[in-house]
Image (cartoon, rainbow, N blue to C red; front, side, top):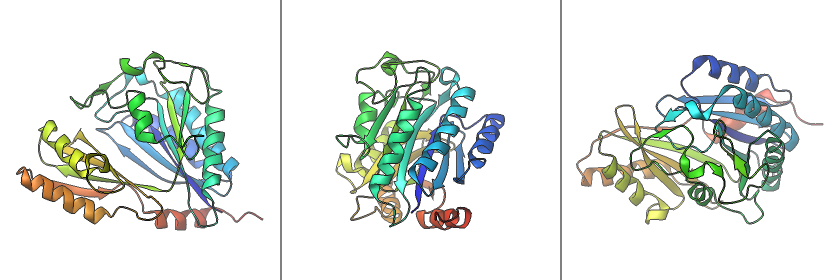
Length: 293
């Protein structure tokens, strides 16, 4: 069995802090840190961890998250990417056919329970880890995650989610502290992050393209998209969500963005997947982790 998770931390600029976080991620017993990806404009870093058993992966993710809570303070954070917390998001996934989705659910629940014991940190579950399979986009909207989208700027602890929360967390207190915010933890099939750069500074036009691209806006099945200011232009940042029957094709996404951008006379720049493919991650994890007897 092989499980993986992505831990998203709201820090992508302070190299000293990032180095300390990498050291913690790489020092975990019976877990492997497969990759890290930092984005300076988004001020955000993802750590991909893997382990054979839910408890092993949960312990590694929580150790990394607690280190981030010590080092990163949301009140000092500015970015062009939305977030609701220092440890903004942890997504858990089965990495092999021998790993049932229920094992990813258990991992997410263990992480949520342990993180909820951190002082002043509300934790919300989503996906199949949640009792009603609450979806991540809906949860984010309820918590004000997208507030700031009109300007593409997020600074400090957003007033839309400060203090008492409008919805009850699954773990932890019902009030959030400005220095840490809240954490979203969930489970599901693997999600590919794929971004397309639009060579424009016109955020509103880029947002129109991201809306038409996304499933919610009548676009491609399994595609979640938002337009965010980035270096040299505005990125259409996409989550390609595996439904179990069909995984969105990055080439199809790229072609659709090019079509929509051409209709508005907007040139398209770099297109890229964030990090390694799932198959590459599985191979790396199997090379690093011993088989459980």
